[in-house]
Image 1 (cartoon, rainbow, N blue to C red):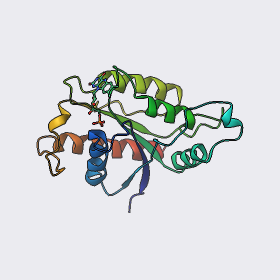
Image 2: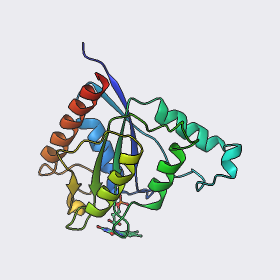
Image 3: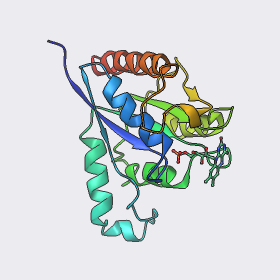
Length: 185
Ligand SMILES: Cc1cc2nc3c(=O)[nH]c(=O)nc-3n(C[C@H](O)[C@H](O)[C@H](O)COP(=O)(O)O)c2cc1C
């Protein structure tokens, strides 16, 4: 039997009705049997401040443990003003400290950006990748995943559109291989 890998999923939107959250949940359902996707919540993390990190808030500690305890990381994010939404950037910064003890280092990762707009969050996707290079997260390069027109990806009952499903299935299948490949190194 192949190994089972736990995946920390970070959703860049805090909105209850977030399309990105729906995509994250859809990916969890479509994922091959060797991946277990768990959303790690980022909405209650205080804004990163080195002063308070001298005696880290419980929310920082819990978050760092959740990321450290996962085998790999997956980012599902909207684009805010052509970049990474602040809550997600904050979570990345929290996980990166204390210096020398980053929770991210070496975890295979992937990014999917999701937007109702036509460009599919390209700017956020690539700004996020810039941080991941520094954080030593080997980030899946292909397939790139920019889900544009995402306002129609789910119907009113929350069901994933059949036209979007193959795209998400291809992405998560490739990511499963990416994780397997990196965990064997
Ligand atoms: C502050 C803010 C900035 C935004 N900037 C962009 C943007 O640069 N590009 C884009 O495609 N959509 C942008 N949007 C629209 C979001 O893509 C849209 O609200 C999307 O539904 C957010 O994802 P969610 O449904 O997961 O919350 C922005 C939305 C907000 C609130």
